[in-house]
Image 1 (tube, rainbow, N blue to C red):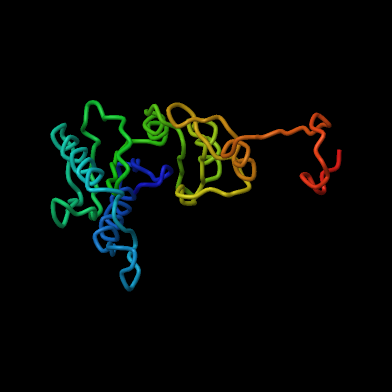
Image 2 (image 1 turned 180 degrees about the horizontal axis):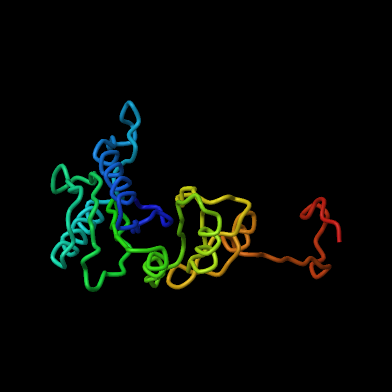
Length: 213
């Protein structure tokens, strides 16, 4: 989607488990309800920010297809001036060189790998580094991923599209601001202002009622 922490790549093992996850993902994604936010019942997600953004997402999709990506779920657009895009899923495993591009739309790129170490390597093949996540049951595998993941937010069996207001928020590489967040966000979302008062002006009490020096 359009959130900065949304996943644009899904790295799956090349085995029966990966096949089952992917089949279920395609099934669920193809049945998602999309539409304007005032739709009743409420849609799962709404439009992208502009018609230009929608066209950009489709152009990025088409570029990946020309490089050899395989369509697993076709992204559609109601009309040329519509900002509503259905979910799209591409298998980009065969691409010799995957464009490292933030698309900001409902387009997911799937990469199949033979083992866990290759998955970590693939996850770190990006100039960005805001959020990453691992879905698994083994704690030792999670600890291995946590040590080697190149991201500022690394979650275990939780969505990456969100952040606690009590925790730091930020990333590395092109995603990085190297700042704490949470309650400290006020420190860089506003200009600090300092003021001093002194007896430099001899104002009558009628013009400056209540001033105490």
